[in-house]
Length: 261
Figure (cartoon, rainbow, N blue to C red):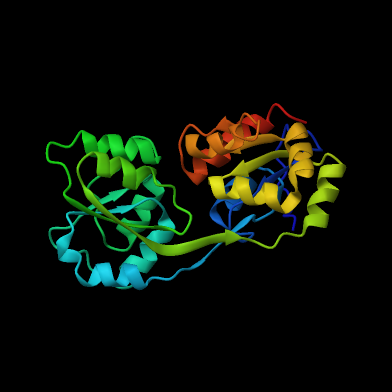
């Protein structure tokens, strides 16, 4: 699916498109930011976010008073928790990875006690390490594909961490033939990745050969270092957004595309 490009004065008449690989619709936050910047958007959702098996999460939330902290690494984990607990329990501290996740929590009436300087798991663990009083028990509602970085890092600090599934991240169904047609004609200027899962699933959907062809002619733009690492493992160096937010990802892509024709 291709969105109509918004022309900007002073820009070349022809400009290659930007691929969005995250799970969102044509009016999703990243696509909208890119279009506002005058970029043509191709929606290639490599992953989909679906409801998970929340049995363990709901059980943990029924005895939430046992926990000192709850950690949100993604905005996708917010709704499954707040649907069960609309009001933040007294005495429960809240940490969020990234300002975008913190904003979603605040919009639902949950104040946030800790947001690390950088929106990644390692920065969150470092922020906890700097606290004068370390967490004792932590609830971590996470993706079905969440990396163990947060749970392992907090465990090393002496915390007991209960990582439970809040939602599922799965492969999406791509129109691979349409994707390959864009690759064949060299019509893609940049590919945005907002998670390691998107890297993994796009490569799986296209096949290693076409994935390499795509990123040989188009730049890879990653939302943060963890996603960039997934690309590096596949031999690709990514441009990393200065701010690990969707707006930061869009701005990094725009700056890059200013130099590409």
